[in-house]
Image (cartoon, rainbow, N blue to C red; front, side):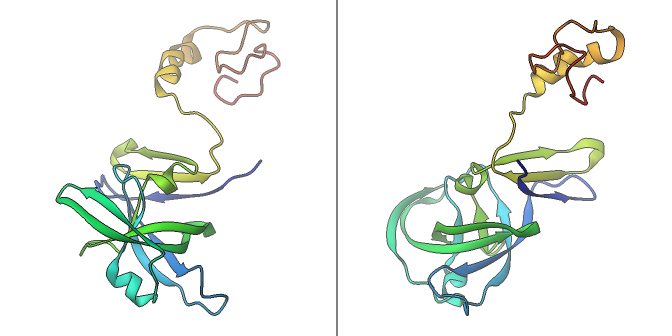
Length: 180
């Protein structure tokens, strides 16, 4: 099973994970113009947010309202339904987003999108990169991996022993790339 995915890389360390997105109303049909905007990925946000300015540009009509809690207080926000196209044509249809205000981003990508797949961030070599894939296809466990790392380098694994990758197969029959 292949996932749809993308990776973004920075030349140094960054504290803001951003990407270009295309956003359109899912009610306007094929002639609906999409807007390419900048989005900020935020694991602290329960749901994705678009600015009221962008909702106006797309001529969106609210489908409902919701009470939202932010660091600056509670308020009512409009709910809109949009289609979102992430980098590398990762498409999300009929996403319900709420309205918000920002001068730094047009869309905030929250956990409603992030939990649709796998999301990982690395700062290896002094360069930030992040990757996103839908659907979720594997579990990440850096602790398990780091405990097994010394085995890779110094201990010989016998062919009939279980493979340390955790697949449950004998080492000689396992096709993992980590220990072969």
